[in-house]
Length: 130
Image (cartoon, rainbow, N blue to C red; front, side, top):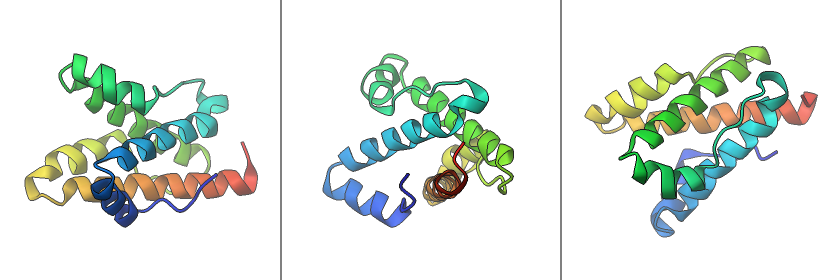
């Protein structure tokens, strides 16, 4: 699994591709999380493309909030199950991603934490497997 997710690439390629890279990257995060955690928790994360283009708009943005809430919580659970330091939880999303937008850099800190947590989980998966 890929372990080279980073904030700078996420922001710069997102600007150049008019957010297509960002949508693809979050889709990869969801797919990777499904591969990493499904055997342990039996849950399935909705594909980000479906959520972004359909569910998010139909629910007036609530779908986007719930997707990030659930993904963040699931990442934290998987980090704990693998014995890694828990760096992302659902509260990380609400505090940095939402409330942190008041200081403008909060969402960037949240994405940084999310991508690095996925790097750590992917590296652990590459070494130990399930």
